[in-house]
Amino acid sequence: MALMDTTSRVHLLTVPDLVIQSSWKGSAIVSVPLNIFIDDLSADQSRRWSPLHAVQMQIAGLSLEEKRKSANTHFISASDKVGILDQMVPICSAVHMFDASMMRPVLVISHISSIIADYQMMSYVCNHSGPSAKKFCPKCMADKTDPIKKWEMRTPQSTRRLIERMGLMQHPKQMQTDTGIKAYKNTLWDYLNPHRDTPIGLLHFMYLGLAKHLIQYCYENLTSEKKQMLALHLESIDQSQFEYKVTAQSMFKYRDSRQGKDFKLYLQLASFNFGYVRAEQKHIQALTKLALVSRHMQNMTGNISEEVTAYLNFIKENIPALARKSKAHLGVHLEDDIEFHGHPLHYIEDQFEKNHRTIRTGIQHQNGHAKSRDTASQFAKYEVISHLATGGYMKHGILLEKTSSLKEKVYLFRNSWDSQLRLMKTSVKGTHYGPWLGSKTENQS
Ligand SMILES: [Zn+2]
Image 1: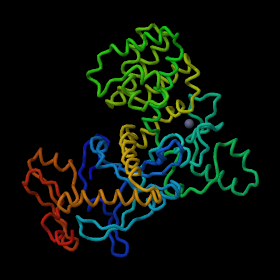
Image 2 (image 1 turned 90 degrees about the vertical axis):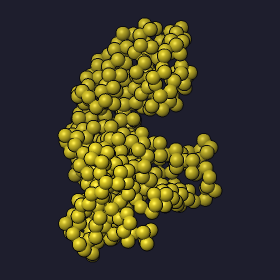
Image 3 (image 1 turned 45 degrees about the horizontal axis):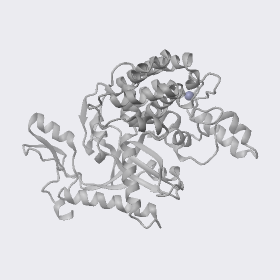
Image 4 (image 1 turned 180 degrees about the horizontal axis):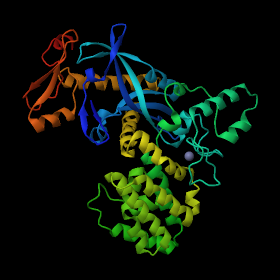
């Protein structure tokens, strides 16, 4: 495991580093900070919406490079009957596990660093009624009178008090409308501050929010003749350096069903495209500003929270219809999110969304009688197969390999809990199995 400090230096940590100097009933206690992703995914082939509530996780301290790998994104649970909040209960509490590097049982306490979610789910974990509520923000008390402003922040104390009061009321509807808070059981309040620890997901905020709204708005304000010219110009642009070609048909005709990555790619071309057809100057300016914010975001340069605020003020001034969107308001909380949770790329939804495809594909091969059980056992089988494929050992990850390429050595940890833990060095290049390689583990694997 690797943790990054504020200067972006990577520290390699081993399980013994993470062990709190105490044990519980003979089990060492390991504390692991996690990023949890929650979302509903469509589990039905037909158009009927029968969602599967799924929970996935990543270790919060991994480097960006590691976080982008599917191997470091783990499926935890999925159910069509048990709600997300109930599925979170065992994750918040301690779990008994066996640690292969220490060869002994451990008690894993998962400290939830952040919850990664779209607007609906973000509201759900905050006991909030959602983006259509009068007080539409799950983080502050904002309403539509001035949406591009950080209003009085919601706190766990104030929200819990409201939930308690609503629980005692016969008709809590009015209070729900006034505050945007909805009363239902939510264990998360005992473990974290959902208002603060649910940062804005870049994919939903930036690409399916700001970019989507702006591109759609600019397109819809063109004459039909200009729309045709726009499509022709887009088709003629050389996109050979892109991952894939953004076509006019997909971008304009089916613009409602485009994914975040389509808007991310098109945003790079949009100001040239709209500039060619002489769209309104302020529209082109907004597209250019947003493209620059996106670029800085992806390259981790510039002061992105200031740039987002400047963009929001620009659209408030020039395209007020877009500034009134609930998603746009979330940008005012970007600064706080960065302060508490780091750069937004560290908790972007991309990798988790990709995993949804794996879950969905698996469901197609099931009889559909017990989706959650079959999905869970399928993922368990994947884990067993990869465990066997690596010779019965758990992989230590590329970070150790990287260290080895620098020093041409791999650090291996051989440990036995009773004797002292000691660091061993070996020059076996490319070996990235655990310290237990060749030890008594072999008999047990
Ligand atoms: Zn707010």
